[in-house]
Every structure is written in structure tokens, then in C-alpha cells.
Length: 121
Image (cartoon, rainbow, N blue to C red; front, side, top):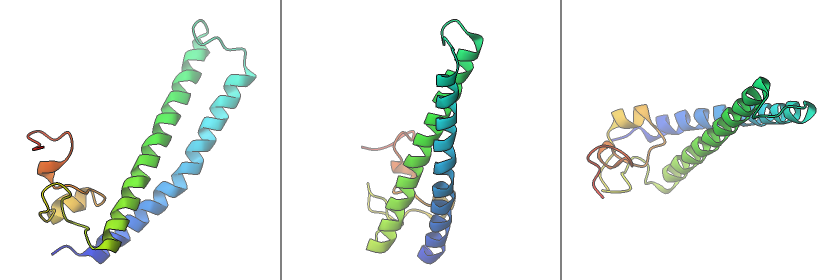
């Protein structure tokens, strides 16, 4: 049996980390965008343009990853509330505690993780 309360605490802590990170990432994007607008950079021909474009792309990707991670954590907390936490959404079997230790927000057992080798549809 999964210690749901322990995982709830872990998920709440992870949620706080992600919520704290989002404003910093948004600020990074704002700063890079401002730097790009304040300069006369031509991304194609100016060596600095490529760096600014890369920084903006990287910050945007990190922001999107953090948002997606926060959504996964929120969904796991909802599963705790509705009593379905720790049950694979594909096969209905209990997700092993070791799997939840590694990824407490996962809704799938290892066998049914999207993209996993040997995943059954």
C-alpha cells in the first residue's frame, strides 16, 4: 500500500518549487526580450543575435517545461483527493512505490509510461 500522505507532502513541496521558479523564468524571458529590443541586433548576421535568440529559446523552453511539470503535480494532487493516486491510468494496477519515489506525479506504471519501450496500447 502506498503512503499517500507522504507523497502528498512531496508533491506539495514540488509544487512550491515550481511555483517559485515560474516568475524567475518569466523575468528571464522579459529581460532577454528587452535586451533584444534595445539592441540593433540582426539575428542572422550579428554574433550576439544568435546568443540572444538562443537565450530566449532556452528560457521559453524552460518555462514551458515548468508549466507542464506543475500541471502534472496538480493532476497528481487531484488524484490523491479523488482516491485514485498510485493506480495506473492504463491498466488499473497499483504503481510500485519505487516508481512513485522516482516520479511522484506519474499516473502510469513503468510498463504503461508513454514512450516507454514495450508500451502496450
